[in-house]
Length: 329
Image (cartoon, rainbow, N blue to C red):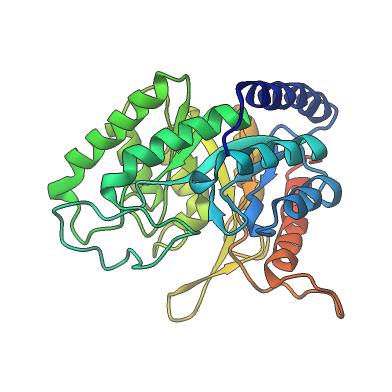
């Protein structure tokens, strides 16, 4: 089943109308950021995830990664139309498409020991399919009325130096494709990929200067590197005017040096300082919860999943941390 032009235009128009409402509601609070959550950190049931985000968390924004057991880039046209109606129902606007773009092995390099040999968030694409993933992500941006696509820079190599220039060229090419559609390409610093730490993010951003190529800053991922302090040390290395999205989670470091996820506010990251620095530096894009931690306890006798219980607990911590920083979100 394909979306007719009338249905698509109606969906886009409804989303645009919701954007106005979301901005109006946002301006009525003291929150300088687009407080959000990745939908499938709550549930694969998109309606339920949106209900929790809007009605229980009081959000006006949501980040789309996967739903109904599929990665977003695998959604069929009728499923996109269904998702549009759900977003309209809950008056939610989409921060970005959290695509799996370039979360694959780099061809010709030794096989990454970090990259998993399984689906990642219901994504199972190889290098040859990446142009298709990008094209589909662009279509999703238009359908969901957002201007941002998240990407990575390939599974982490033990020695990326021989391939770094070619990897950068691939990112530049994708950014230029996005620019033709007035879209932002967001590179996430991901510890399992070649740009993982804040230091590496600063180097990659310095090498790739396309104006629509921005950073999805993830302090939680940077914190997994021994000796890294995401804020203030790593943040102070970054071109802050090129941060276009932020993922929020927290980490603790175990006595053996390994890390574990934690609810926001329950780990080692100075989120209070980070949020205050964001406001000082004029950052006003998404602050999006990416829970990852699975220590939440569902209420006795409920059918709530551990994932949802954990996200509820971490969102509580995130809002409390924002309040400590001086923001009501």
